[in-house]
Amino acid sequence: MSIIGVGLGVTSMIVVLSVMDGFEAELKKRLMASDVHILITPTAQLSDFDAGFVPSRVIDEPMVAAQSGHAKEIDQFYPVISTEAILRIRKQVAGVVLKGVPDERLARVRKQAHESVDLPSRLDDAHLAGVYIGQELAYELGLTVGETVTLISPTETEGPDSAVPRLKRYLIEGVYESGIPEQELHEVFTTPQAVQSFLRRSGVATRWEMTVKDFDRAPAIAADLRKQLPEFKVQDWIDLNSHLFHSLRLERASMSIILAFIVIVASFNIVTTLTLMVLEKKKEISILKAMGARDGEVAAIFIAEGLLIGGVGILGGIGFGFSICELLRHYPIIQLPDVFYDRTLPVTFDPVYYVGVGVCAVLIVLGACLYPSRRAARLEPIDGIRFG
Image 1 (cartoon, rainbow, N blue to C red):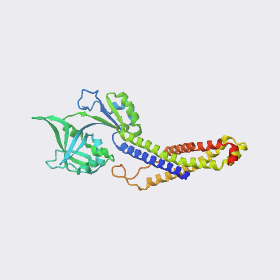
Image 2: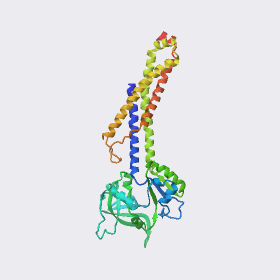
Image 3: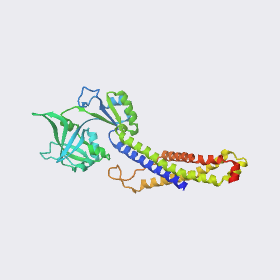
Image 4: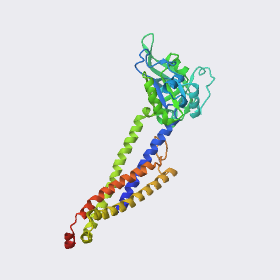
């Protein structure tokens, strides 16, 4: 029973940690496929420009490459003009971020679009600019390709009587699927000219988006840029999604502590087993000590037996946990709701978790062996022979 208890505790820890790490790996994979590895936005120090709009020529790719010292590592760098807006169709509304991106970025959005249509040649719609909306937003509002939507800007325009909001109609040119529900729900893509016309500004940008060839190098490149561009706010993909990664790490730490108590509870079985064995073998222990066995040698017997019980349980738990992880990885046994990135549990194999869980379990088992072994070592030979 002690072996089974320790094994189940180790299995639970390995499976949960592997699944949690799988979710984080899937999140990183989705972010890697995005086009924002590093984001540069102006700070309040650029007070000469209002509402966050700055000339797009303030910084460019050669300047960023020179400032960061990582010219060969930059994959793409381009200015973006974006604004918050309210998307309205019929009686439904939703808050979105309208982003005007260059042609090369818009081409990638078109590749992600599973539905698209050429701009119509009808007289009433020929002047409308096209936008690409996310699959989640299309599903929530019941939008289809070819419909027209109205975008309302929170920036007011002076009218003849009072300030009025800016309105502009757009045609849904495509529905893209990025694999990131948060982006699909809020981000709407179009050309920079369409956004500049909407805001009645030209030659300005609100942010610069950057991708690097090595995704894991983005934090180091961003750190160098922060030193060289103090008037700009530089965020890497970890900063942009810090709430998600912090939540995953907190959940992983919490689950590890909770599941460690399974091993701790199982170790009490080892304490009970060894304590009963000390009581049953009192006479034999006394004879050994009378023959010259030292206290440490007697204690080592029970520590070795406890480690044997725990070791078999730990090895069995590691093997069983690995088998469950492989089963979950190759067969869709557990189906997840639509809110998750994947419909099946993502599972990764990280040897660090297996070694870490094994070492942690050994330390717990070793701690459980100390009390019975010390009790056996302190047994007086005369008492064991007399009362054994």
